[in-house]
Length: 168
Image (tube, rainbow, N blue to C red; front, top):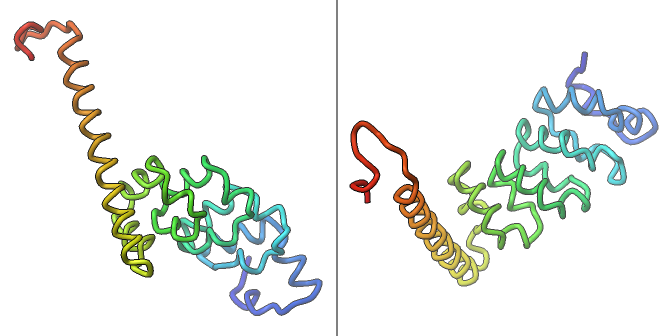
């Protein structure tokens, strides 16, 4: 069983052995301990998508910054992180904030995404980015609504309430 005093381990072989053991790190994360920063930067643990996602979920969005560069540049991984915490995108590569699918997923799951990712440090750029995103999302929603209307009018499902010819 893990004890919080383990977090006080200094440098050295013992700390190295403890924080590079997947089971120890996994248990610590499940307890909500932020331990990814104690893992060796070149450790395969930081390439473990499941482990990093769990750390983001249990310990907070900032845990994404400890993920390996390979994971941080993996579109599918970043998209899955957006499902967990949109605020984690603050620690994602810049391209993730320009990806409509990732941003849409993040905002849908976490409305604070916009506040976290567009923090006002580049006010003009942030405003421009958010306005641009809003117009692109609005266009996508209009396309979706049009598709749904055309599709539903085009299928011939006979219902007791209304025949297909009178639905559109």
